Length: 239
Image (tube, rainbow, N blue to C red; front, side, top):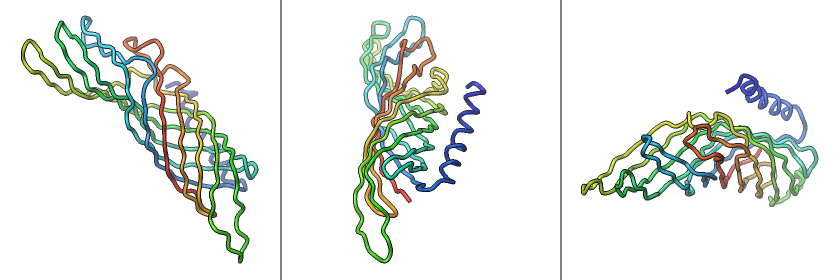
């Protein structure tokens, strides 16, 4: 990872979080997400020069969680900065012929990232209650769009290889770290929508789609252009 990009990833949350903290109309939140992730492009496994297997990805269930600060520019428009730990990846179930033997690969790729999404938020607004009058809780609705910077901290490809090998049933598990096959950094587009319920403290629900804008693979065994796409659903609380 280049030194300038490291500095950006270190300084950006301090600048954004610090700026939001001194403004008015600032809210803090936490959430946890269920991710459904897959790849665009093909993942290729090469054991030796004469064994090369191309795997087509399927959706895999992953997770993420983090904290965020929202700074309202107006009642309806806000900037939301987040710090998240998230996992992307995919599942692979593929039949393959390896040295004229019929085999099956059941594998899973898990990629862990520390991400900093910077989002523009637009939505409806409920005014804060004026004591001593009571205002019942209500719903607000919103959309978000922005960019997320990610740093790949860990990647592992695991699963099992099974089949009929020279007339004998064969099944062997494997697990390998593959972080070196992918770029350390990722830039993703984030779009989504959701709703919140409450007045002062609020319960939140969001659904987002996150897609890489750049090729995340750097190993020549991978396809020419490989990216992750993730559908993320989250629940949380806002103060």
